[in-house]
Amino acid sequence: MKAEHLRTVADRLLANLAELATVGVTDDGACCRLALSDDDRAGRDLVCRWMREAGMDVRIDAIGNIFGFRAGVEDTAPVMTGSHIDTVRTGGRYDGCLGVLAGIEVVRTLQDAGVRTRRPLVVGVFTNEEGARFAPDMLGSLVYVGGLALDDAYARIGIDGLRLGDELARIGYRGDAPLPLYRPHAHVELHIEQGPVLDAEGITIGAVENVQGISWQEVSIAGQANHAGTTPMRLRHDAGYAAAAIGVFLRTLARELGGNQVCTVGALTQHPNLVNVIPGRVTLTVDLRNTEEAVLQQAERRLAAFLAELAEAEGVAIETRRLARFEPVVFDAGIATRISRVAARLGHSCRAMTSGAGHDAQMMARICKAAMVFVPSVAGISHNPAEHTAPEHLAAGADVLLHTLLELAA
Ligand code: GLV
Ligand code: MN
Ligand code: MN
Image (cartoon, rainbow, N blue to C red; front, side, top):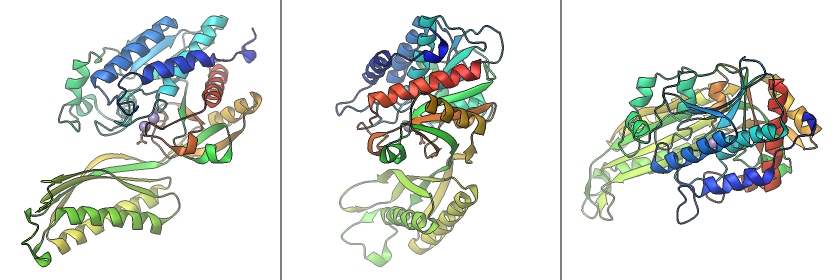
C-alpha cells in the first residue's frame, strides 16, 4: 500500500487504551498511577511489552524516561513522539496515554505495511509529567533537555514524603541510557485537549501553536490553634481564615487580570482539622497560568503583596516555596502548519490553538522543533474519571500523528 493511504488501526489503539486504564483503576473508575508508584511500574511494564511486540528497541534513561526506537533507512536524527502514562490521583484514561499508545500504534501500522522511513522514529514515555506526586510537572522531559540536574530531580520529595530517586530505583526504572539519549530532528505529541474549545466548536483536530506559562507555589500559613468557643474573634490568628482569604483573592485576581488568566488552589491541608479548634496551620498550593509572561509575573507580584498584607492583618506567618515555574512556550510554526495541512488532507476539520495544560512537548521544544496535535475532550472535562474522547476522534488524532511523523521522517 502507498504510504499516503495508510491508516492506524483504531481497534488496536482503543484496546490498548482500555487495558492500560485497568492499571491502577480505583473504585470510582479513575486511573490512579501517580508517578513511580507500583501502578506506574505496572503501566510501564505493559507499555514496554507493547513497544517490543511492535518491533521497537526499548531503552530507559537515568530519570526513567522510556524510549522505543524504530530504525530508519538512515542512521540520523530521529523524529520523536510520545507523552506520559503517569496520572493525577483522579485521572482519566486518555491524558498522556493517548500520545504514547498512538505512537506505538503508528509504528505497528508501519511495520504491518512494511513502510520504512528515512529517519528513525522514537516513541517516548516521560517520567512524572503530571507533577501531582513530585514537583515540578514535566520533570522527566525537563531533565532530558538539561533544564533540571539529575541529582536535583532525584532529591525531590513527593507528597508522601518519599524521595524521587529512591522511588525510581525501587520500581526498577532507573536506567542507564545517557541523557539525552536522542537529539530529535523534530518532536510531535498527540494529546487530548483537556479543555472545551474543540468540543464546543465541533472541530476534530487542534494544531497547537503555543502553551501557556505555569507558576506553582506552596503557601504555608502558621497561626495559633485555639479554642473555637472561647477565643474572641479579635484575638484570633486563624490560619484557616487566611487560607480562605487567599482563595477568594485569587478568584478576584483572575477576574481583574482578565484575558486567559487562571488561578487555582488545588491542594489544602489544615491542622489540626477539628470542629472546635481554630486552625493553627494550613498548607495550600497555588497554580497560576497565563499565555502572557508579563501578566503572569504581575499575578505573582500581586499575590505576594496580598500575602504580606494578610500576614500583617491576621498576625499569622506566611511562607512560600516555589514548586514549578515555566514561561509560555511558542511551538514551531512550520510543524503546526504541517499538522493543519495533514488534517485537511485526511478530511478532518482543524483549527490552530493554545494549550492550557503543560506538556512534555514544551520541554522538547528547547532542543528541537516541536508542536502538538489535540483531539476534543467531551465537555472539556479532564483530570477527572469522566474524561472522554470519542473513538473516532482518537482514531483521527492517531492518523494525523501518523502522517505528520511520516512527512517529518521522510
Ligand atoms: C499537567 O497535567 C498540567 O498540570 O498541566
Ligand atoms: Mn497530559
Ligand atoms: Mn494531566
